[in-house]
Image (cartoon, rainbow, N blue to C red; front, side, top):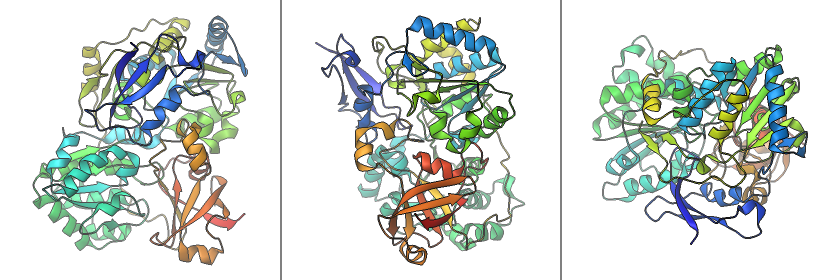
Length: 552
């Protein structure tokens, strides 16, 4: 009888459950499929993205042994090299994604503090959300009990299995209405009964701020609603109409889903969303991109934005970079010339980098769903993984690897217990007083690029772009553009176009869309090319950017 353990899909904060079956021999050293995944009949099931877990677990691109200068080496040699690198480093920088357990985040924070390392979250928008977002105890199941959902962003593309709750609410006995606030067409918009709110690119935060002001939030007393409405591209009565519906409907819920490169002022979006729902005593579900980003931000606390990390590297203040479950060259392509200045680059990941020579040392580690520990839900609850999981043979868990690294630096760090985790989370105080600029930065006539989510991808696509499904069906990034605008630019469906921003140029395949605003284009957030256009790592803003397009 093969071992079966219940796991959490950590590709997004929906925390869907599934089972892993594992034999006595690692699948990485056998032709037999000894590791497989199975649906949890009592859960929501996995989405298209979650179904890629099986392929990733057994992927031929998994890191099985340490890789030193593009060659596999023994753990003994790798640890000697790592110790030498860490001891000779002037200052270390660490970048992690949000798919790590609360325990791993705690160890990472302690390691950074003891070594004086700078520590960043790979997704800047998740970091900003984590610093400002506050939960109100709303649960996913509450969606099915309401008659009105106010949704910011394309929640069904970012977190597909929430559709089960939305569909029950929409088509169940309550017949709930859904109002989507966004600047571009989306999957979520299709489920509205009475209409959606179409905004200028990146202005979602300002619209929710108008609602919070109408609710009487004192922080926004001095704000002129007419100016905000003009900035959003709507009239004040539109905000008043949405506010009245949200206020008067019993059990209404605000859902916020962001994508990096989509919303311009994420701190204000999450702050205003909380103030609105607090004043009206309504439900609030603040989502992040990665599964545990809110928990990671609250446990580590002293995170710095990616732009500060890149600036420190450029100034020579950091000479060694450690990337955990993310690839800096994939996530921050506009900063490649800066990353090349590093004396040492180390990757800790279950999957190989696209180019081994980007890193001096690559160390294998298990996926988060191959770890044990706890995570923070979007409702603010701390939950442990359902079952204990025995690590894959020969591949350490991230927490055990981080503990080994701490010993190499001469520091002893222990795994925190549940009480310590709760104490650390409770001590976190979200930031307040997000800044609001009322100066319009972008004329309406300028072509603006907005990043959007795609259901089979996650984040910058470091993991999901390596899967056979996405390689076969979505091998290259596309740009969605208004049909009339495409005619003006003399570009056609299927042709390759060069998209240029202040940060770089990249190739995209043209896809014309009838309902796209004329001076707005949409790029899939999960591609290296998109990260180049938005200047991730160099651009301190996480919102839309001006672009130009020409046929290749």
